[in-house]
Image (cartoon, rainbow, N blue to C red; front, side, top):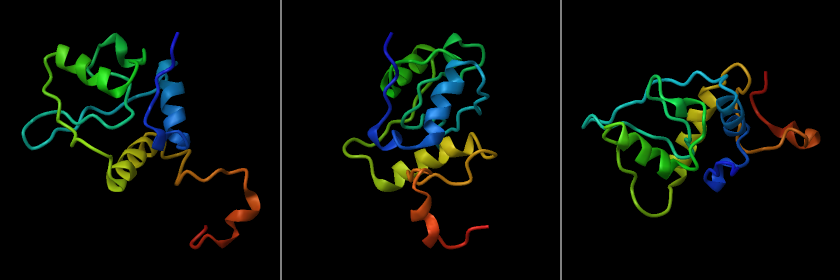
Length: 128
C-alpha cells in the first residue's frame, strides 16, 4: 500500500503530517471547499482527501493532489486550475497556513522549524 506523497515543501510541516494521520483515521473534520470567482473549487497543494460530503475518499487518501483533482472532476466538480511552473513562496506559505488552520489548538505556528532544537529558539521575538 503506497502512502500519499505531498509536495516537498510540506514534508517539514507538522500540521500536514497530522492531516495525513487524522484523515486516514477518520478523525479529521475538513471544511467545505472554497470557490474561486468563477465557481470552481479550490484544492490546496498536498490535499489527498475528498471533501465532497458522503464520499468514501473523505478518509481514504488518494495518491496525490493531481489524482484528487481528477477524482473531484468525476464527481462533476469544476476544479480551479493551478498556474503551471514552480510553486511560488506565497502559494507555499498559503498551503502551509491552510493545513495549520485545521489544527489551531495544537499549532500556533509552524515554519518548518524542528521543536527539538531547544537552544536555537532563544532569539524569537514576541514569544508569550
